[in-house]
Amino acid sequence: LVTRLTDDQKYGMIEAIAHLIHRDYDAIVKDFVNLGFIPEGVNLEPILPVLAKVFDQALEGGGAKNINFQELASDLAQITFDYPFQIPPYFALIIRAIGVLEGIALVGDPDFAIVDEAYPYLAQ
Image 1: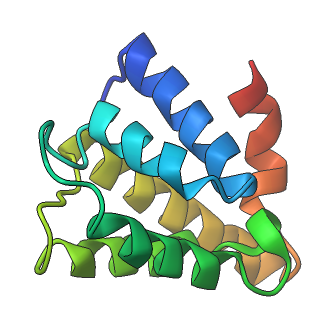
Image 2: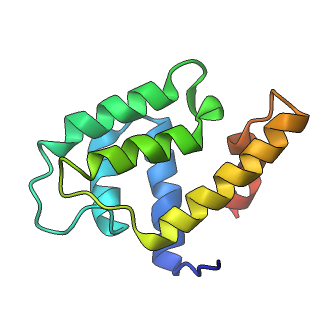
């Protein structure tokens, strides 16, 4: 399975990661609208505290370096049942690939942090 990202999607994900690291959840919700997770025109107020809780849990115990992307994707998928929130197909493929690569790497190195390894590529 292959997906191609537009420049807007690439830069949008970089901005969302930066906002996540800084726990700027107001900005992340807006990023999610731009990235297609939340339809435009949806009232963001009820979604914000739910996403903040999911991201706070994901960032516990070491910050962004220790995020388990498969658990985060699962938590985000759960939100789709209660809120107008969707996982765009391009993002589902990316998370699946990251999850597989992360799992393989963790077998060889239990201290592997995918964020550390991905950062140079995100910065380009």
